[in-house]
Amino acid sequence: MTHGFETLAIHAGQEPDPATGAVVPPIFQTSTYAQDAVGSPRQGYEYSRTTNPTRTALQDCLAALEGGRRALTFASGLAAEDTLLRTVCRPGDHVVIPDDAYGGTYRLFAKVAERWGLNWTAASIHSVEAVRAAITDRTRIVWVETPTNPLLGIADIAALAQVAHDRGALLVVDNTFASPYLQQPLHLGADVVVHSTTKYIGGHSDVVGGALVGIDEQLLGELAYNQNAMGAVNGPFDAWLTLRGIRTLGVRMDRHCDNAERVVEFLSRNRAVTQVLYPGLPDHPGHETAAKQMKRFGGMVSFRARSEEHAVAICNRAKLFVLGESLGGVESLIEHPGRMTHASAAGSPLEVPGDLVRLSVGIETVEDLLADLEYALAR
Image 1 (spheres, rainbow, N blue to C red):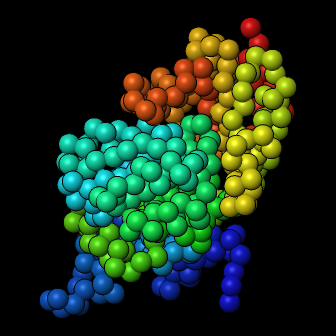
Image 2 (tube, rainbow, N blue to C red; image 1 turned 45 degrees about the horizontal axis):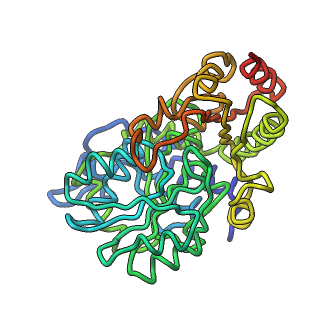
């Protein structure tokens, strides 16, 4: 039987506990397990770095939501990314990354993986030809965010999957901004999906985590081996909190999108705003592609102010929009990427405009959000 997204979010990997009938999966807050005999762990559980029933429930649910064979969860999104890179790549290999990407991802490539011998090239992932030109004989991965962070650019997942596969590379898609509710890259040809589950999947700004979801059994086996060998796993309570957040992902994303569309409409009319960046706008260069591969256009909105000074002032004046990093929680956040989340990219090909403001639009009463933005923009 095929189930809908919301049904899977509530039930996949979350059967009632066989011992008690509890409808919410238990938190198995344990480091080790009693074994039935030497070399015979009960149901395969021997040590919680390797496997834990609460983490298993989360992984099974995420795999179902993304349409993958298996998911693996980690202590953070960057821990997931690092495990993937060190599993797939070797010193001397090459990766194509977006010229608009999360600052932490750039830092991982430029300040950590590069010292290990991994080469990278930043390319405009909005252009299939630009990505094709950036691929070399040593390229193992084409790395994509869509929508991108923070400029909300759109990549054509199916087209880039073909380009990557033609050259023997994997297409990895960071699906954090969209969430599996709005976009499922594996169905479009991606090989691996990356998530910071801290964001929309967890949804309540109370837990940090990451995930990888894939379809190739051999690659998944290698990733699982390194998940255990490297040990950057999420604990059982973190897994439980993330699984709790997943249960309301669909209804939350609908409200995020509803509110974001109203915010975009307001910003587009405000004279203090010089440009609104949102893939739902008909004049956005990636609008047609986004409409083709996304269910809706998401809860993230970026806009450009009159100057960097003005952008910083807007961030500081907002009250209901909390000044803070991260995104995807039920509460609305505002930030200045150039001085906050993307400060590590200053002076690089991924440097963001100083006049840019990024909003994570929450699920509050939208009229209150509009009033707060009106106050913050007035000067």
